[in-house]
Amino acid sequence: MDTAKIIFQFVIYLSCSCVLSVFGSKECNFPAIFNFGDSNSDTGGLASAFPAFLTPPYGETYFREPFGRFSDGRLVIDFIAQSYGLPYLSAYLDSQGTNFKHGANFATASSTIRLPSQVIPNGGFSPFYLDVQYTQFVRLKSPSQAIRNRGKKHAKLVPQLQGGYFKEALYTFDIGQNDIGEAIFANMSLQQIKASVPDIISHFTTNFKNIYNISGGRSFWIHNTGPIGCLPYILTPFPSAERDEAGCAKPYNEAAQHFNYVLKQAVVQLRKEFPSAAITYVDIYSVKYSLFKDPHKYGFELPLVACCGYGGKYSYSDSVECGGTVTVNGSQIYVGSCERPSVRVNWDGIHYTEAANKVIFDKISTGAFSDPPLPLNRACIRA
Image (tube, rainbow, N blue to C red; front, side, top):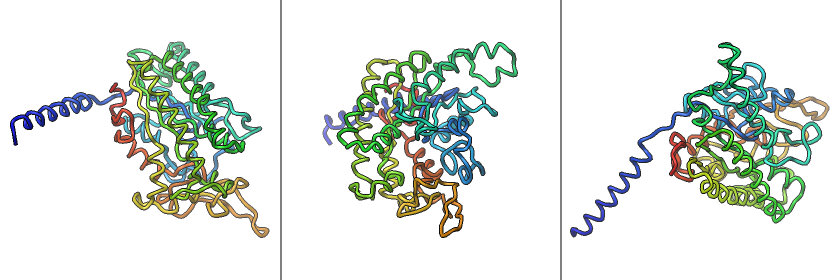
């Protein structure tokens, strides 16, 4: 081997070592997490506002009872909090046993980025869309000092303002699926859905900037949206939609992918506008899609079929939900969970099982699906 080649390889080695040293020398220690999103990360928001929404068997795998989550157990956001040694996030809307000392969760199931056309109880979407979640964050942040001044009993339940609490927190986002879903059920064409995406992302970036400015935060972890076309609540009412190799509805996944493309471009612009912030874009779509395309790789089976549901090819019907009852030949049948949720991907036709959520967390936390490619425990580092 000639001298020039040896020198070249040595320089490359030093360069890689320096990069690893810079990125590997620091692990983040977030005092709190503030989350904004929909049912993929709702830890009790919608159930607090509308208690009738969750009944058994929700929560049966981990909490042994309905615990505010639209799953049989924990969500990705739960595993994120746990990875930092933080307690599970309290929902901002939950008034029972709530503790905001280590952050708060503003996500609610059925939330959208934009104001939806109809909201519960007159429609299927949450009144707590992203604009409202932002105002709730403002309300939480603003009176925290006044509450702390009331004494130790109250101080234990609210964020600490000293020491850069809000500035040093991690801000997470997982929202957008319901904006796509609303468009699909409005019978919009794929072209029309794609045309609506820039305005949806514009609303997202506006709220991001508002949260950035008022929080002083510098660490942001943004999930893109998942493969909506692989979920039974889409597959069942649209049987004629073209299927891909995994059996998912191809045009609706294309809509999600276009959303993700525009979102990623927006994140690039946000990094330019806020150079002091560490903004991580997480391709959760690819991880979730792999569960449908290669389920056996992860020990899963029947990925397109709901574990807790009833009726048809996908065990899903919009006329009876998980935990409900259906009349069959004059008899009432309880819609319970499948025998082994631990080997299933989909929980209730819309949401993921705890087992799937754990796999998703394990993969995204490595940084392999992040831009920049930094693991979750280094989400405070600007690349």
